[in-house]
Length: 243
Image (tube, rainbow, N blue to C red; front, side, top):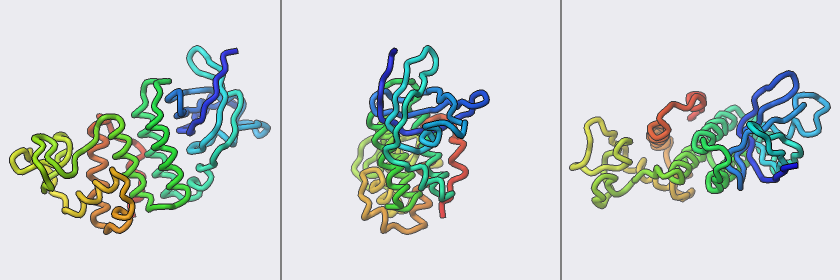
C-alpha cells in the first residue's frame, strides 16, 4: 500500500455521497492535497470530528489516482473548536483558508512557508492574541509576499526612490513617488503606511497600538492588493467583520 503521513491544516470539507467527504488539506511537506474521508459523516466515524475546517492534524493517507484516501487522523491542535464559536473569527479564518487554497493551486507542490504562515495565523486567532482584522491583514500580506507579490510601503515600487511617499497604487506594486504616481492612486495617511509595514514585518507592538481609522484604510488596501494579484474576488472576504 502506498501510504504517506504528514501534518496538515484542514482548509475545507465537501459532502460526497451519503456518508463521505472530500477534505482539502494544506500539508507541511506535500502541499495542497484533496482526499476522501470515507464514512466521516456517520456518527460512528472514528475521526470525522477531527477533519473539521481549521484543525491542525497529523494525517495518514493512501495514494489514489485522482483523490487520496484518509486512513488515520490525530488532532494536534483543535483550532477550529475555538474559532467556530466566534463568527468574526470564523469568517476571518475562512478568508485565510480560501487564500491558502488559491495560492497553492498546484496539488502536492510543497509549500512549507505557506503552511507555517497559516498555522501561525490560526493560532493567533484561536488564542485571540491580536485583533482578528490585524491577524488577517498580516497573514494576507505575508502569504502574498511568499508567493512573490510583496508590496512596497516605503520606497517607490516603480523607480526605487527612497520614501516615505504619499501615494499607493496596487498595479504599480505599492507606494509610488510623485513622479511615478499613476492616475487614480490612493493617498493613505502616513500612519496607514506605517501600519501596513508593521503587519508585513510582524511588528505587533506598532500594529496593536494603531487607530481604528488607519486599520480600516489598511484593510481596504490589503484587500485590493490581494484580489488584484489573485485576479479574482474571494467569496469569503465580503463576510468579514471589520469592527
